[in-house]
Length: 426
Ligand SMILES: Cc1cc2nc3c(=O)[nH]c(=O)nc-3n(C[C@H](O)[C@H](O)[C@H](O)COP(=O)(O)OP(=O)(O)OC[C@H]3O[C@@H](n4cnc5c(N)ncnc54)[C@H](O)[C@@H]3O)c2cc1C
Ligand code: SF4
Image 1 (cartoon, rainbow, N blue to C red):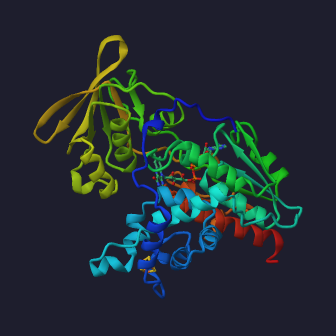
Image 2 (cartoon, rainbow, N blue to C red):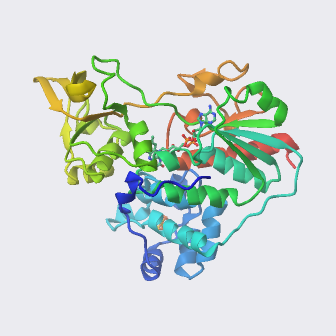
Image 3 (tube, rainbow, N blue to C red):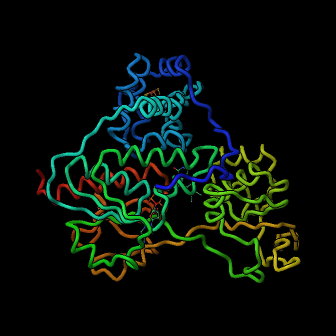
């Protein structure tokens, strides 16, 4: 992979959750009650044995702790940084019921996995060659988890990725105050370090490699293409310069330099909108407004993230429906017109980001007999099996868009199902 440019706009961001030092990690780990039937494990889509890895930190066995984490979640390093733990494991820690601060599971996981990367501990090897081959479409978290698991079981693996950058949204989308793209690429290298994974970048399926070609080349295929481009709004002024999809802008900001406008409006109330407003503040935009058609209570973005956005100075415009993008000099956008219950309001802006969802990519597989698409999402059963023999799917393209940890769990489980199908259960 090419190194990322040094002048990436994301470089200005600091980690919003600072890493633990050795003493802090042991103190926090020692607080854990090591619950029987621990609710935190159930809340983790990859089912990491959380009390076990925390106990190992408390007893000074950090290498063993990292092994426990990676055994369930090979992307445990990025998940430690990007998981919304407040609504997953930490949110279900029993301490919440005792009015005691819950265990900081994400920060402990980051402590153990960062140590593993720094020390170069490797826990897994490729299995003996089975002579079977699996093609994976996309190089995001779902495919990477599947690829690693398939290599452990000795299958040959080829990843087809349309971009030059690997890692999917972990590299191109995640907020840089959680994880920057260079760290996401460290993880890609670490996962591929198991060896024997062939990666073909700049290859879009089926435009560059047809479905037939995939079926001829491989004994099974995994679809891990995630979601597509930002949804846009067909309103007057939609083609003005400065009216952009939020995910596209975030990708640019993470992978290269960006010019900060003076005033920006983000339209939407989900997690991408909340990330975008915080990122705009971070790159130096003086006035940032989040405009949402509902009120604060109806936002789907996580409340703890929105609270942080408000503290950073972001303004909110509730019950606001955009009706037009307003033109300024030279074909650039100058603002957005909204209707609100109390009338019309124009908000000046040099940049307008639309964070109203992403396209679903399932329809590109609808031509394949046996694959069912529901609202753009690929329908799968247990282990990611589609209705077409030897075709599996997982991650955002099959779950409709969740978190990195869901994609990892689904990629891993699909790999196990593929293994069973290819070996008859051996
Ligand atoms: C802005 C943003 C911020 C997010 N922040 C977080 C967060 O903080 N925490 C969290 O847990 N989750 C977050 N998510 C969600 C998370 O990133 C996704 O759930 C996760 O990356 C899904 O993994 P995936 O492998 O299914 O898809 P992706 O990560 O989207 O990877 C799919 C890959 O497939 C490639 N591809 C697509 N089509 C083709 C094709 N036709 N041929 C070849 N390759 C193709 C793409 O280029 C991409 O590399 C965020 C999402 C967004 C949009
Ligand atoms: S629920 Fe909390 S206290 Fe119990 S094992 Fe999990 S992290 Fe430890």
